[in-house]
Image 1 (tube, rainbow, N blue to C red):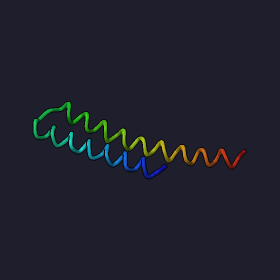
Image 2 (image 1 turned 120 degrees about the vertical axis):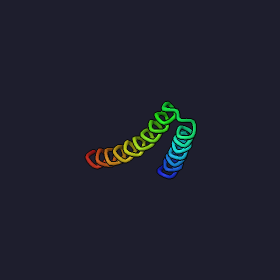
Image 3 (image 1 turned 90 degrees about the horizontal axis):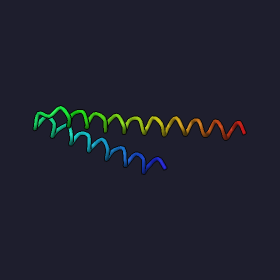
Image 4 (image 1 turned 30 degrees about the horizontal axis):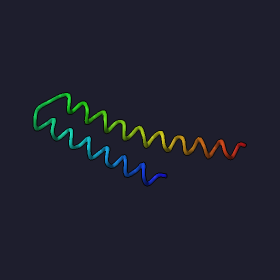
Length: 63
């Protein structure tokens, strides 16, 4: 399950970099904000994935 999430995260980071490049090119703050939010969402998705993985393995050991 990690491989599809990593591929999706890489796609999100690439999209955020594309948005930020367009923001610099057009001098638009909203595109820069959108790129930053997409990058933060990608990072948060990885953090939640790893936290839930550790939580689920702990809960399965306790049962």
